Amino acid sequence: MGDVKYNRINYGIHSICPSRLSDGLPYGILKVVGGGTMTLTSEFEELFGGSNKFAWAVEAKTISTEWTANVKSMPDFLFELFLGATVVASAASLTGTVNGLADVKGDLVAATGIAAVAMVTAADLKDGLYVIKAVSATTVDVFALSDLEFKKAGGTELAYVDDTLKITVTPLTIVTGADVTIPGTGVEITGGAGTIAMTVGDTAAFNVRSAHGGLSEITIGKASTLFPEHKQLCVGQKRANGDTFELELHKVLGSGFPMPFEENTFAIPELAMKLVYDEVSDKVATIRAKRGV
Image (tube, rainbow, N blue to C red):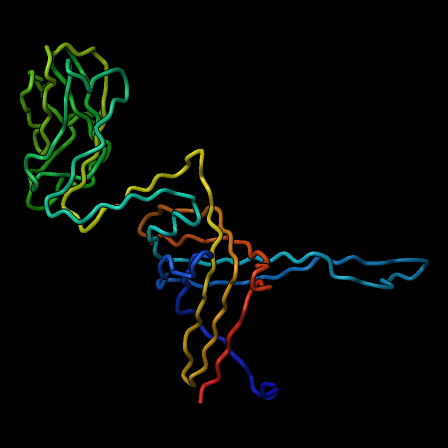
């Protein structure tokens, strides 16, 4: 039995680590965290009778077990656990990547239109989503949906031509099997293998990412979306007297979290979770409190 005179005090938070139910291995660790709170709330059944204004008997009913946490970083596994997302990670690239070319309207990506887009000048690559539009049977205009890196150091400066977000001053001519560079972007368009005969108004889009240390593409909202049940270990900050305090949650289910985009503000998603009874361990949670020496 512990020392009843000892005042146990929990201070701060050090980390939250989710792990798999199947083998106990961690998904990763959250170190930039703002806090976490476990709340167990019971409903009560009260028995009243006669003229007595107070209950004759009270019994605890079901207990709602909730766990909330404020996190200040968003690693890939967070999207997997709380948004049921599929994450595809790409290795670092010192040059950058150009990919994802696909039709948006019509059949622009074809033997009679454009065959591919590719990097031609790494220094000029600028992050963003780009749209190619056929403006005649043999020419296209290009539009950029963001100007985030238009003035990127070390590359050719880019600017919008007008309010349509067009970046090509004059239409680019697509020639069978030939390459034409989109000025200022570091990207070239390759013409299809057949006779070029595009339909005016057809469009296609592609993604550009300049040199990077790694890239994650996170897909949210598939019809097959599942939210994995998992464990969590929350560790409090070690106190000056050596005390430690940790909370192991044996089965956790999270679903959704906000992703704020606010002016001059770091995003701090708040995770809302439910704690589930784990019949294997016969527990919902375990607290381990160590007293310093």
